[in-house]
Length: 367
Image 1: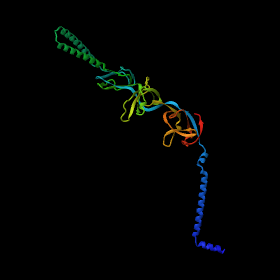
Image 2: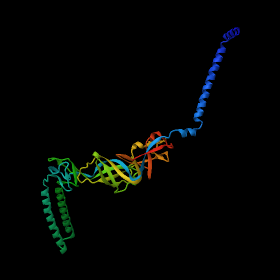
Image 3: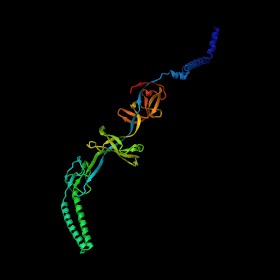
Image 4: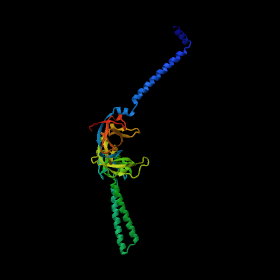
């Protein structure tokens, strides 16, 4: 007992001894925990390949697609335009006395649109024709006298000049009289008429505009990389307002690019005999370019790789393969992807949880 009291008094006089002991105990406890952790870790990861082989193989669902020949098409956006359009103008001075064709009506080439007052033009024409007869008689007489030597060549030339002048005057007055009747220069729709009865017009004043919309034209711009695949008379399709679709042919390809956009203009003509398609509306133009093999899938199976390439994940010999693709065309019920031939197993469920190179268990689904 005395010995214990002596030890207690000795320790009480030296409190740092307690601190040293407690510190040693804590260090020993920490070292024992780290060793156990390392031992446990070593047991779990002692053989990485063995651990990997023991991991469960992910399951994915695949669908087998077979590549089919399809046409890669070029989609363009443009507007419908008339085949031809002309502004009818007055060619003589006069007052409008009658309008025949109504706005929006179909007119044929040569059909009367409006009439101008003839004024005194018929009388001037009759006088010119009478003078022409006189000049003809004078010329015939001078010609006979010249042939008999009773009149010189100068008088004959003067009579001939007077005859030619009278003929020209008759032709001029005839044309002026005809032009008081304003006619359509081409067949089409009288889209607008600028005159009414009582209006006074002069040469050059617009009377109306006529648009020929049969065929109807769709104009669009094509990039320099795609223009090489387009040919004259090539088939094309257009989707117009109201989702109406129609087929036509390429009728014009520009040989010079637009300096600002570096694109080439093309024109596609579409039959419009019943004139139900309108000019000036937006149109989506689709031109088939070349035949290629592709599979049709839903956009949901598309994926991106680590560098941003668009493609799909397929299964080859129980391993995931990322295949870059090129969109050939899109339909309402799917997308055609190029870059395939023959049959291919595409991952349709679970592609977001596996990467290229992963081993998977593929469960086949019906297409």
